[in-house]
Every structure is written in structure tokens, then in C-alpha cells.
Image (spheres, protein in one colour):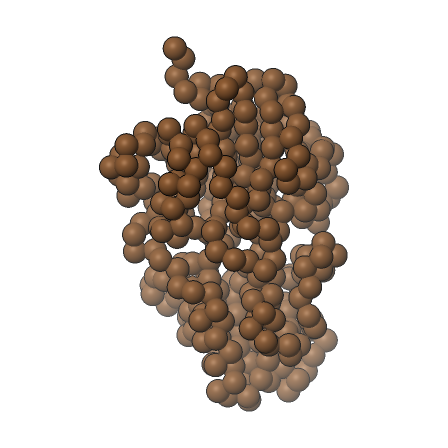
Length: 332
Ligand SMILES: [Zn+2]
Ligand SMILES: [Zn+2]
């Protein structure tokens, strides 16, 4: 008998699916790429053809120019070479998908990045029972338990309202986190204009074009210092401490990231108000997901794999570390 999943070949350049002659999330240009989602560590430019959800193709279009390839809707199944390929929601960012691969009676699910909690900007994760579940482990340690998102949003609003002469400047990754933060604020009843750094503009517009309403957004370059007092301003994490922020009214520095659980990381960025809002599964979500999809084997792409390897072994599931390089998850 051949080894389970012998037709899947993880390598430094991504996950090669031999009977489809296609790569999942390759880190270098390939003739045929199946892409889970638009974050730069998974979606690179320069592939021959890209198979991805329409939203992911649109996001890649904004970043790298128009893509040649095939848009695959959630739930649609296609044949690529000798493999049946399906895209199923991963709940990570708009358009994010798990890729379901069926070949000769074996099912492999490549989850990409994912989370299990509600996100008003994207379709929720769908667990798909499989033989091999290929997962990330960005927050694969029991210390990582993300708090309730609503209570983090409330802390942000409380801080904003406590001093109307200042603004709260929130660092958030430009794809996914920024739009989710805005949508979560709206869901919590905050309908004031939100100001954004110019780097956020194209992706916020795209989200709205793709049917995710974000309310009234204004460009910081078109506002006076005074107008922004008492408001929320969103910028990429890299702009939190740069010269650009000097034109803001005495900003309270905040950041929305799962990494804000680690005080050291908040201090490094001079973050006064760390908000633990993550687009990745925490420890409980990782282990619950493995229970839900009940695989014979778990393959771990990247992150903190040791504890998850151990957890799998104690639950009689074979686990394997792939140690794929190039998946950064600073995007978190
Ligand atoms: Zn991602
Ligand atoms: Zn990632």
C-alpha cells in the first residue's frame, strides 16, 4: 500500500499536487497556482495561471495587475489534471478558501490561513472531513486564546470617547484586518466617519465593490487636524510611529493583532492600547477544527508546531511538520 497522501509533495516552494500538476500557494512563479487567499505570503505575482475565488483574484488584481486564470466560486468543483478541486470558505479574509483535493479515494484539505470566529467581512469557515488536514499553527500554543472581539472593540470605543480632543490611531494590516476592524466598529454601533491612511484606500474600496459595506470613510490627507479629533484613524502597522502620524491630533497609539497578546510586541511598536483581534485560529480553534474534520493525519505548514504535534499524538492522530518557509504571518 502506498503512503497516505503520497501524491502531495510539500517543498520549499509550496505544496505540489502531482496528479494536478499544480502548486498550492507557491512562493515562486509557477505555471499553475491554486491560491488560498490574497495575503502576500500566499499569493505572489507572476504565475502562469491562478485558480482562486473571484474575490482573491480581484485582490491579486489590485496588487499585481490583472491575473490570468480561473475564478472558482465556493462550492464549485473542477477537475485539474486527475484531481477534483473545490474551494471552501476559510473565514480568514474576504475570498479566503480552503482547497479540497480529491484523488483516488483520498481527500486532502489545504486550509491556508483560517479562523473560526465570526467576521462580518467574510464567509465563515466550513469544516470538511478529510484524510489529511494541512493546517497552519501561527498561534499553536495553549497560551494563545483570543478574547471576545466585541469586548476588544468596546475597549477601543471607550478609549476614544474618554478624550474627544485626541484621536485613536489603530495599526491594522491593509488587507483583511483593516476592513474587519471597520466592520466590527459599525456592528458595535459606531457610525462616525473613520479616517484612513492612503495605503488603505484601494483595498477598502474593493471590499465595498465586492459587497462589504464599511460606512463613511475619509482620507486623512483631505482632513485637518481638528476634524480628526475624537475620531478613529486606521493605518498600516508600519506607519504607526512614522512622520506621517505627526499631522494627527495627539494620537493614542493602538494596534489590532493577535500578536498583541505578547506585551513585548506591543512595547516594540510603542502601542499604548493593544487590541487582540486576530484573523488566525487560536489554540482552541486549532484543536476544535482538527476534531471537527477528524483527519487520519495532520500536516502543519508553519507557526508554532510543537504543541500541536504533541496534541495530535495524544489524540492518536499522526502529525507531520512541513516547515514551509516564506509564510510570515506578520500580516496578522
Ligand atoms: Zn493570511
Ligand atoms: Zn499566512
